Amino acid sequence: MYKIIKKRELNPTIFLMEVEAPRTAKKCLPGQFVIVRTDDEGERIPLTICDYNREKGTVTIVAQIIGAGTQFMSSLNEGDSFKDFVGPLGCPSELVNESIDDLKKEKILFIAGGVGAAPVYPQVKWLHEHGIDADVIVGCKTKDLLILEDEMRAVAGNLYITTDDGSYGRSGMVTQTLKDLYAEGKTYDKCVCIGPMIMMKFAVMLTKELNLPTIVSLNPIMVDGTGMCGACRVSVGDEIKFACVDGPEFDGFKVNFDEAMRRQTLYKTEEGRAYLAEKEGKTHHGGCGNCD
Image (cartoon, rainbow, N blue to C red; front, side, top):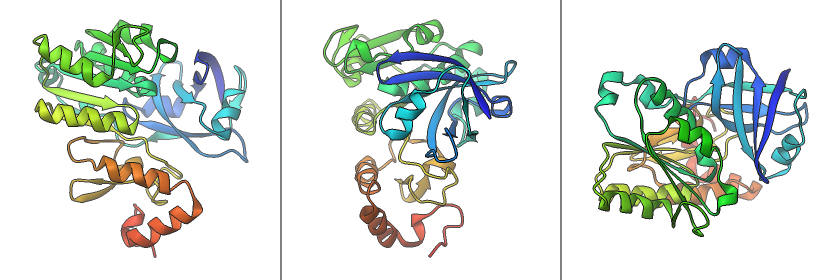
């Protein structure tokens, strides 16, 4: 069992939990995720690793209430435990495999939309711990939905908050803030963008215009976390990838966002899943790639 040692409500629909998971804490890196299950009957819920403490043996997760599983999960309190806590899964951020000296020569920008602040934070923190301060744009619909502002401010070089309704920070979408920064004379060598699929699509459209290489982190529907179910299949350039094993990070310029968004909608129904399995054939599944 994996005990919850800390719980904090970030806003009415998003909560943070610090969980005792020493084996995961020992191995995880920024960019990876876990799949949790509250009890024997609970659904498998994939969640980004927001933070970790190797000495304490804890992993911090952030979840948004979007269905019955996360609603029940939000009712758990400090002292309660998860039945399963599987991870680390997925590939770490490509930043952790780069030379620190090379990273120090680059101007790096992160763009986070909504709950995307959770997977952005550990990457920015990791860079900060290695002497690299990246700029961060965090966007949300309204001030009440902003999360992890203090944590992000402590590790970011410059933090730009923007709200759709102008209730806090700058007014408008993250793309407008990026345009404004470039108009003010800012330029960047690399961008990491994480958030809702539609936000990443339009952010990448802009970064292409700016010739700013962009990595996106995809969070499509996932079931087993091994690539075998076919839920997180995505087209990246001319290749079929599976976010749970090949990602979650991909070259944003190559991701087919329109296909990915259509696929997420179809996968929510039994009829839609059957249609995708028939249409995609052997490429419907990852792993062996030869399932009938």
